[in-house]
Length: 244
Image (cartoon, rainbow, N blue to C red):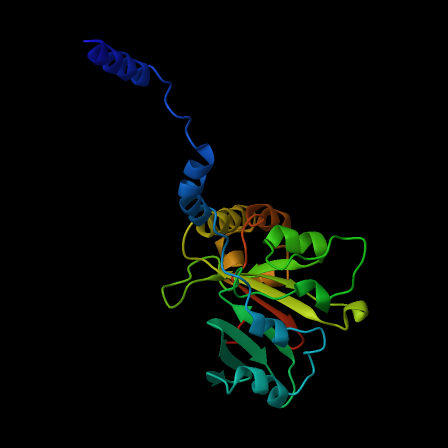
């Protein structure tokens, strides 16, 4: 009888023990991989592009460039297109020998280059590698224009462009930043700018692109496109917005 009593007491004592503390570190480690995936950064910049976009690449021979890129994927007029690490590199050359201008299409974190190295440093903040149009304007003076703002038809998407014309301090390097008008928020910005130009100067003024030489309401465009990022950026000389 005494033996049974001891067994019952021991069982009751075991049931009354507090639960083992939760191993919070183990739980944290168990969920950490999922959290890391959620916070994973974007694609790393292409290392091959870093070898191409050096400060002295402008004026270099195309033959040198092609030791890095391989042959051109496409050549149309003065513009050559290269495929490098899944990025599209654009190279302009008037004589087919030396590089006049160079840039990147589908511009973004993976496919970008250090813009500021091609322009003189000063009191203005240097241009970030992946800028908005507003950040470009903070660093460099420039002007907005568009391939079409009214009655554009369906042949191609209109393109909004911002261009900086370099001075002697910049070795006369220009910059051309572009974005196609396909969807919001670009479409909203584009329509607001166009509508305000039409309201002030009329449809004929806008349809005939008189804003290229006259008033383009640049302050309106600057406000509308301040937070939009260009998808194509090119630097150098002999840049032509219509060049494809």
